[in-house]
Image 1: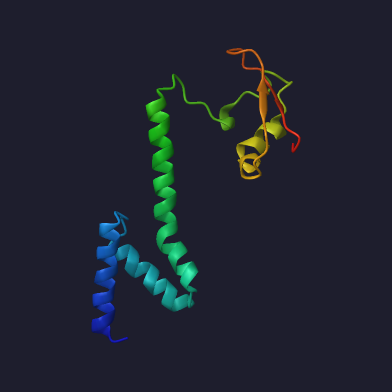
Image 2: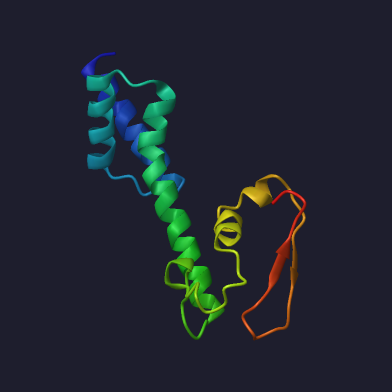
Amino acid sequence: MKNGNAASLRDLCLNHFQILRIPITPNDLDAVLERADKQTLSHLKFLDLLLGQQAAARRDRAVERRIREAHFQERKTLDTFDWKFNPQIDRLQIEELATGDSIRRQSNLIFVGQSDLGSFCITSPDI
């Protein structure tokens, strides 16, 4: 493809990104195009490099927005959880559930316990 055609196709792609509200800058596109040329990347790898960071950033923003809108009193994560607080909680089981694999497998989960006590039991035939 001639440079003039490549430049107009590049501008057309940037316009597509703008219409689709995908915040890819000309510099971002040029960097990925250059890398694709140097490393002879497949079409799919090129798309992954171009869109992957944008998709991850959008997912992160969506999670942050949902957390903000939930108005939690405190933000708690498994990283800060005190596993010694209740030794009956199976850490490996909880961390397995946190991966979301049980959702992808469409497994049934039952959470049993009194509210506000922080103790619970998780049962599933797959875990």
